[in-house]
Structure formats: structure tokens, C-alpha cells
Image 1 (cartoon, chains in turn orange, brown):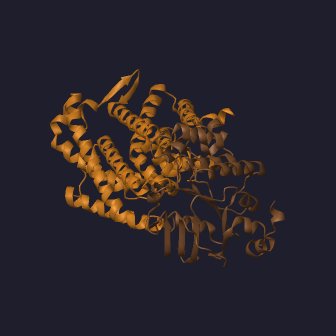
Image 2: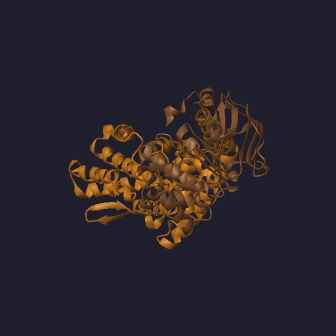
Image 3: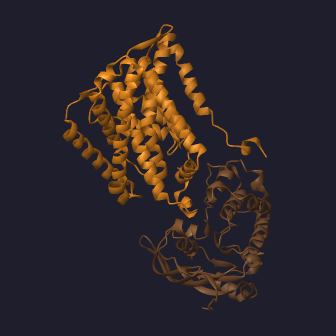
Length: 331
Length: 246
């Protein structure tokens, strides 16, 4: 038995590429402290994009649904959290970590519950009638996105709402001469925790096994006796809740919320899930880090290229691996 | 059409019609699969054999007619429920999960949670490659090994009815020989087997009963032995000479 057939092995090449880009760009940046700052900023942005995109890639991979309304779930999550965080402003502005967390935890819970609930409504009412029809999916989910944005205006008003940043995560820490924003470290930690949790569920549980199989061949999963529709609903709700969590992280990073914030992220989210390989959580993680890092490095080294760096990155990755960094099944 | 009623049918189709979009594929299919044996469903390309299996499995819904399985009407029964009632299905494309290991493919098929050790040993006896490549990614297996995985996954727990779509498609003669041996062993169990096949040598080696389809209809049913011994009938029904398929 050849070694390659013996056990599935991790494909290290995309991860090595990320590390290679990070190290290769160092001479172009010119200063190690600046490079460290840019790298941590890129990783943090990548982690936040990953949190927002991870649910969508599962929904896309498992259910073959192009859900443009995912952006609305990000915005709704951000607004739900904003309501809680503003109500608990003193706890948020305190310099005490525990006080901050006592405000952030219910805000995250509210965001995930509301986004998850809205996701359940979307799956049942809006998306279920258009399974298997991509054109109609685009139309109804874009419509859903617009309706949600208008409903946000009705409930929370049309104006941008400023958000307090958690006191203990404001400012920067110095690592040698490199200044690193504390909030970015928090974003990296939360992103890693979400990735670890998803990896454990997908690779160490029977539910995860079902989801991975369902992404590859939902019909065969049904033929083995599993009700794939129930799995669809569960994954859709979980993906929506993750969008809500991503909305909270992004809102606190931007220190404000607006109804369009989710929609504005959709292009980069789609780029990430295409780069990663449709339906692949690991690919989504690698793709998000790649996008975050490249966007930050390009913004510093070649600002004129920054606007198109994500598109250029997607073109190059797809020329190299047409089905993404970590392709899943026949997707 | 030569037909005779089967006294104890595990599966019976009566006047089954299936539409796929605007296309009318099955035109009143009638046939029965006797309990306990191996029935071959033969026919030229496009005759409707795969549609017939998929309709039985509930993957495409019959637009008219009735399907009965083990004494109950299952015409409108959803696919997962059919699987729970004891029907296992191996599709033409094998339906293995390429991104999962052989072990994980088995684990998913074992609805009890974990494959039974004695059952696994029996399967490893039928298909030793499954033991050898237990931890390998299914997508890395050869075509023959993938087919072995698809069939062994379907029987990881005892099933009442096994539906297999073209198990020899694209396989080397030596592997087909292994498949024949494995199906002979399977026939010794209580499982009723319905196999869609184009390889007449394979069909003749294993089949107890046979049904032949053409243009979405059953045009012949009877004993496999009778068809195998009647070259003129083969020519008329299948357009082949057995000699060419030895």
C-alpha cells in the first residue's frame, strides 16, 4: 500500500503558500515592526472574514444554495449586538476584561440567536421553494437582502450607529517596536476558536461526517437513510448564526453599524469561498487568511493595486487550482 | 411479453410511469422481484433501467402506478424511509464519498453507529481490499476498489433488498471475476438482489430471474437460465450474441 493511499494527509501547499507570501513580502515592506503590524492586521481581517464566510461555504457546498441574503444576516447580527452593547455601554467602556465580556457575551448571543432565527425563516419561506434553481435563488435572496436592509432602517433607523469598542481591547500592545491593536488579537483568537470548533465538529463527530458527506453527495446520504432536509435546516441556521457572530466582530472592529455593512462584505466573502473551494471549511479558512494578508500587504506596498488585489488573487488561485485551494468532492 | 406472477415478491412494480422534466421515461413498467434470489434487469442503453432503480429508491417519483416492497405500498415513501425499511442502493456512479476514508464511508452506512465486527470480518472476506485500505481516502482507490466499497458499504448491515446499478461498468475482467464470487456469497444470505447490468456474462453467471427493458417498458421476464440458453431470444431482446460477451 503506497503511503499516499494509506491515510488522508493534510495538503500543506496552500498553507505553505500563505507563509511564503507573508515571508516573501517582508523585504518589500522594509521594516520588520511594520511587517509584524501588517501581518497581524491581515490575519485579524482574515479571521473576521472567515467567521462571516464559513457558514456560507457550508450552505453553498451542502445545499447548493447561492444565498446573497447572507449579508443581511451579518448586518442583523451586528445591529442586534449593537442594541445590547449600547445598553451596556458602561460595562463596555470599562477597562476591566470581565466587565467587557459581560457585555460582549450577551451581545454575541443576541446576534447569533437573531441571525440564526432569521436564517431559519429564510430557509423555510424564501429558499425552500427555489432549491435547485440558481437564477431564482439569486433573485429571491437579493430581494431578501434588500427587504432586510429596509427592515433594519425601520427598526433601528437609517443612520450609522457608533459603537463603543471594549475598553480592555482598545489601544495597542507593543511587541518590540511593532504596535499591534489589542482588538485584532481578540479577532485572531475568536477566529481560531471558531475554526477549531468547526474542525472538531466536522472531523470528530457523526454529525460532521454527515455534513461532509452531504456536501459531496446529498442524494447518497439520503439513500443511506438520513433525512438530508433536516441537516440542511440545521446547517443553514448554524451558518446564519455564524454570520451574526461575524457581524458582531466586524461591527466592533469598525466601531459602527450600518444596514449595508453585510452587503459590502459579500464580494470578498464570495471570493474567499471560491478561492477556498466550495463547501470546504478548511479552504475557507486558508482563503480568508490569504485575502486578509494580501489586501493588507498590497495596501501598503502597492496602494494602487489594493482595489483589485482580491480579484487578482482569485484569478491566480483559480489558474493554479481551478476548483479552489481545498476542493470538495465534485464541487 | 412472457410473464408469470411471482408468488412471493419482495418488490413489485405495477404500471409505473416516471417523468423527468418534460421527458416520459418509464411507460407502465410491470415486473416483480422474487424474494431471496438475484434478479437481473437487462436492456440496451437508454432503455430505462437506471430510471427504474431510481424510481424504486424514491430518487425520482413515479408519476403513475404502484410500487410495493415487502408487502407495503412504497410508491410515495421518501428515500431515507426506504433505506430504513431495508433497501440498500448502489448507484451507477457508485456514490462513494471520495473525501471520506473507507472507514468513514462504512461508519455512515452503519446506522447503528458503528459497523458490527463480525459483519465487517465477513465483508473483509468478500473484499479484502477494504481491510487493506481501511484508512485510505475513498477518492484515492482504483475503480474496482471503489465499486467494492460501494457494494460493501451497502451491505454493512443486513438488508432485505439490494439494488445495484451496473456493478461491472468499466471494470477489468479479473475484478469482474471477484465481483461474481462476491455476489455468489451474497446470494447465500437472505438479501434479495436486483442488479441492472449490461455485461451478459456477468448476468448469466449470477441471475436467477431476469427482466428485460426496452424503451421504458418491460418486454420480457422469466428465468435467467431460459434466456441464457436461447440465443435467438437474446438477439431479439438485447441485440447481442452471447458468444460476443463471453
